[in-house]
Every structure is written in C-alpha cells, then in structure tokens.
Picture 1 (spheres, rainbow, N blue to C red):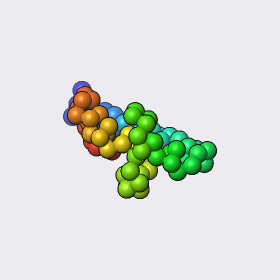
Picture 2 (picture 1 turned 45 degrees about the vertical axis):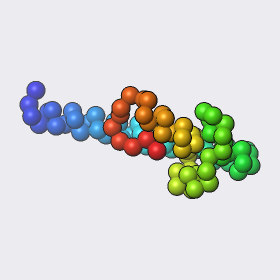
Picture 3 (picture 1 turned 90 degrees about the vertical axis):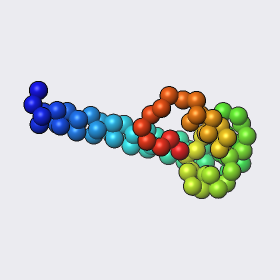
Length: 87
C-alpha cells in the first residue's frame, strides 16, 4: 500500500470515528431533552449509576451527564483507556 493510500485510510477511519462520536452525542442530547420534558429537574438530575443527585453546576457544564462526579471519576479510573475526554 502506498503512503498516500495509508493516509487516505487513516483519514477515512478518523472521519468514521468522528461521525460515530457526533451521532452518539446527538443521541445523548436527545435523550436528555426527552428526560427533561418528561420529568422535573430533580428527576433529571439523578445519576444513573448511584441514583444520587448530580450537582447543578455539573449539569450546567455538561448537560448530558449521566453520572455524578464521584461515579464519573471512578468510571474514568477503572475503564479501559480510550483516546479523548469522557466528560
């Protein structure tokens, strides 16, 4: 495979991964909006893992957060390493 073909394959892989991330983010935002429409803010602000309340500041900074900060920190320490932030 030529150097140019390798760069093209890398570019295609990057574009595919970027599209997957954007689609996943769009789905998270849609789910958050649906939860917000269906429930009160107090219900929306509960973490999926521990059912504790997610701080309002965290939700303002990251509206699609599904974990409270301690659960997110544990998740980031114990999950396999991936590239990029997880928020």
